[in-house]
Structure formats: C-alpha cells, structure tokens
Image 1 (cartoon, one colour):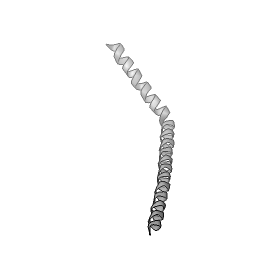
Image 2 (cartoon, one colour):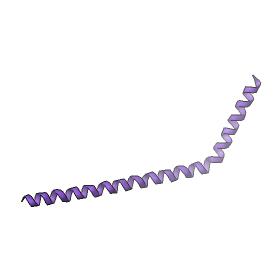
Image 3 (tube, helix red, strand yellow):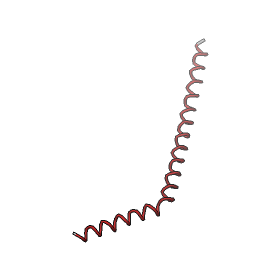
Length: 67
C-alpha cells in the first residue's frame, strides 16, 4: 500500500517536472515569435519613421532659427 502511494507520488512529480520544461519551451517560442514580428515591423517601417523624424527635426530647426 505504501509502495503504491510512493510510486504514484513519484509519477506525479515526474509528470509535473515534464510540464514545467514544456511550458518553458512554449514561452520561449512565443517570445521568439514576438521578437521576429517586432523586428520585421521595424525593418518594414524604418524608412518611414526615419523620414518622419527628419521632418520633425527640420521643423524644430526652422522654429528655433526664427526666434
């Protein structure tokens, strides 16, 4: 009886440890996917964002020189 309890407990602990590793891998995959998407968006919009900041910078320079 006690051996059966110990065996069941050990089995449950092994399953739980396996799930922790699986969860860690799933989170790592999700993080990698989000990183790839973020980098892709930044690459795709990089030129547009750079032109917006150039426009803002030139407008600030014009406003500063007029005062």
